[in-house]
Image (cartoon, rainbow over all chains, first blue to last red; front, top):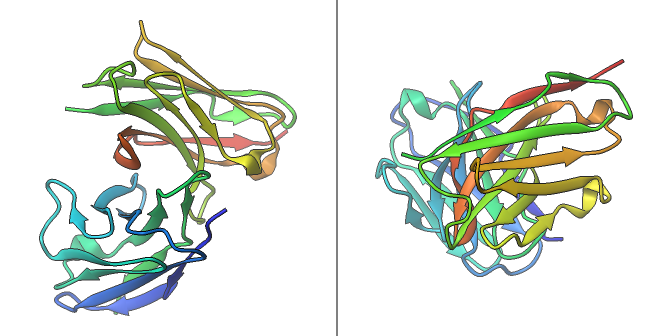
Length: 107
Length: 119
């Protein structure tokens, strides 16, 4: 199985801050990574796929990069609705796996 | 507009079988390239992928569930059914179904249904 590790697990930030979250894979997975945002009490929402492609309807403040084993999700200017938990997922092979998540809290 | 909705029991006893239904609209479960997956999330914990069924009835399961899962789809009702046998308290979670097209990235999700396993 491909293991994914996100860092940090938790971060505190303010509205307007630039935030970067890292996802590392236990083996090379090309660009087969997706990123989700999950607001409290809600279902996850797809933000980025193929490591850097913005899902339709997702604000441009979100961006993704990386390939192989290291990936990043960047939020250029944090908005109130962005205080949530973020997950990366690998879609390279089965079983599909998610990382443990990064909770972004208000400083 | 794609929508998915999970339904099933909210409380199940240990060792029983859990059956969850995902009713979808805005797409057909038999359309080429389409799939429906199940993901769960124990309270306060991370997402865990469980299973996925494609339009052509190809099925994939998480090996960590030790053959406890079965997926079926009902094209006439546009539903996907997940069955989990021999449930235990550790299976307590919110269960989500979600839509995929081509790549197994989940681009639309149901609201989720909380299932508690307790005697």
